[in-house]
Length: 102
Image (cartoon, rainbow, N blue to C red; front, side, top):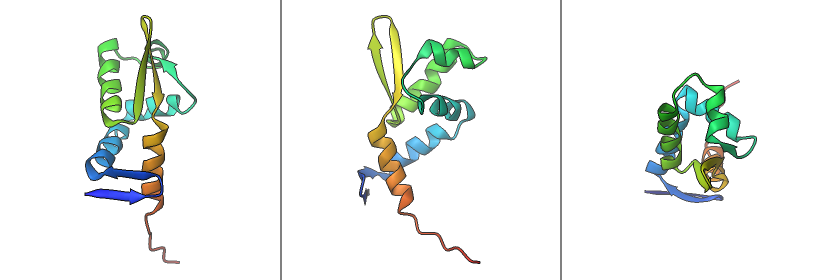
C-alpha cells in the first residue's frame, strides 16, 4: 500500500525501515550528528566507543533504509541525510490526526 502525502509517497515498509533505523540509540545519535551536515565515517567513529565494523553495520542499516546517503571521495566515505526521504517521513507524520482532550 502506498501512502500519499504532500512530500510524495512511500510504501509502508519504507516508513517502517526508517523508523527502525532511528530506533537504536547509536543510530539516533548518528542521525543527530548528520543533521548538521555531511560527515566522514572517521569523524562519526570518533564520537563512539565502538569498532569500525560496528559503525559500518549501523551505517548500512541507515543507508539501506534510505534515510542516509553515502558518497565515496577517494579513500573516504561521507555520509549525509537523504532529505527527500526525511521530508516524506515528516510530511507523513505531520498528516497524523491526534485527539487531544483538555
